[in-house]
Image (cartoon, rainbow, N blue to C red; front, side, top):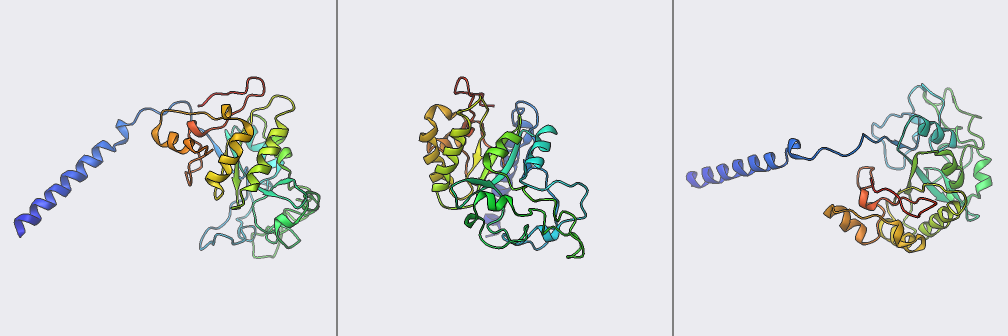
Amino acid sequence: MKRWLKTLGMAGAVLFLVLTVVNASWLAPEPKGAAKIIAHRGISQQYDKTGLGRDDCTATRIEQPVHDYLENTTRSIARTAKLGATLVEVDIAPTSDGEMAVFHDWTVDCRTQASGDTRDFALEELKALDAGYGYTADGGESFPFRDEGVGAIPSLEEAMQASGRAQLLYTFKSKDSSEADLLAAKIKAAIATPARAAMPFMARKVRWTASARISPMLGPSRWKRASNARATTCCSAGAAMCPRTAGTAPPSCRWIINGRSGVGPTA
């Protein structure tokens, strides 16, 4: 019995050693190109994440501000791009009047002076809200951005215009695949005007359905492939991004449009 356990232990140790060696970073090829900066929601206020739930309000948990930028706003997106970000991640939500707003939360209760589901507001109603109303770093004693965020919730088109040379990484918050149709239509309309590089997007919950619906609307030539097996598998279903990856779009799943030729680099 002891001999059998000893043999099993030795086999496990050898297997561990082999897996450690073959997974060693020094065996991996050098990454191509320079490091890429991905800005989550653009420039945003940092907040305490201790015990934070998925739908908890982050505006009431911010640290003492060291800058005056608010997340998912054109000012934040433009500054992020100017600082050299390659991708700016933004959250999108359809509005009651068929537009697409850039806003993170399911409701407007956390950040604004209003209440209700974000999707129940028309775009102009969202713009009339104060997006900085609810931010506090001292439990409600002071509100440093109150009255500073009126008109700050942008439309999709405004976010695209603000992004400059940076690309936008769109995050769906909903399971409703019709939002993919709306996003595709808005992007298609935007790139029908002066030549512009369009952006990859991330479908958090819509995932395969969203990207499969967007792909034919914008044309299969828009989609780039690579030899990487995992990335190719993702893209074979028309996905713009592998599910739940860590914020980067693999080259084979990156959708890049050049307004003049309809194609773009895959790196």
